[in-house]
Length: 253
Image (cartoon, rainbow, N blue to C red; front, side, top):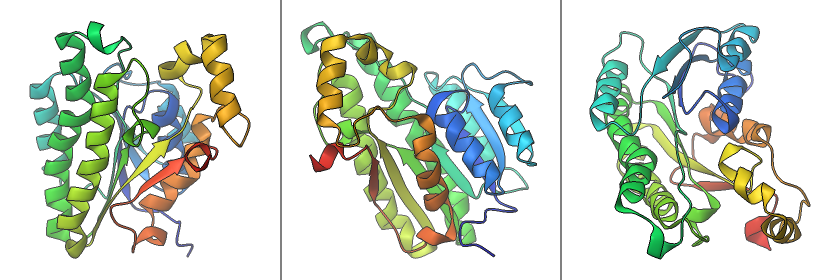
């Protein structure tokens, strides 16, 4: 059996409806995992991510949860933690971004971004992680960012949240590694998704970004697939508290 085989495992992927989350869910299913997809706008049935998972021969369940609503996140956390079939892999990928200069970055945008990108992640991971530590096994993967390392431009709330995700990854790994639970994060580089559409459409910013990436191209959501399966599999059993960049060489430049 391959160390990357996830047959029989149950994976929860948040922000699974499109982009990076959909690619992660598809990759996990292709490696053998059944998938619960979670998103604020996920269709009850017939979604593209559901089709991806079913095409891989795995089961799929859709859950619609608005991560901007703390009460809804608590309901989701209690649901997943209380199920007879335990969650083996938790991928915390749900996120949002608001672009404005710091002087114009409203309290509303700040609070929304911190809630969706950080507070909701902790609420969900606290509940599911407790069941993993009790069982002595589990894989938790956060989606961090290049802005877990850098300051960015016109995204102060997002940068603060993603720095927080990096810190949370390390803090939880310190507590849970002795209990057989791996907590790590992926840091996507400049990936061509809806979240980066404004940058892709800006000829000046897009040119500057491409010139900085040694790989010479924007990333695709599927560029995260292999790293996701790696961190979800037994191949990563001795990896704890790591933020793994998938960035075309951006940070090495």
